Amino acid sequence: MTRRELIAVWIAAGLMALMLLVPPWVVRQDVRSIKGEHLSSSENVEYAFLLSPPKRYSTSVTPAEGLLLVQWGGVAIVLAAVLVTFRANAAGRKR
Image (cartoon, rainbow, N blue to C red; front, side):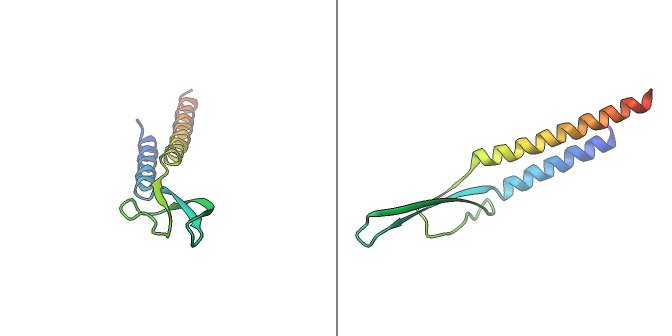
């Protein structure tokens, strides 16, 4: 593995670690009347530090694992494209 490829891998690993430290959270808020009747619901995605999830007057706050995996997949695809490009350029120079 060349130095450029190694740098690209470490940058991707750093991005993935940062995404793990500040993951997406699904914040679901239910609005109820004074009598306790359900009026409406809303669901938002927010980002917050792993050990301190968003604090809202909400029904539930849960990590959005699926979205985090999609983000990691995007980084992996970009990393693969960069590595393929580096290899193709290196092979082109050897000819």
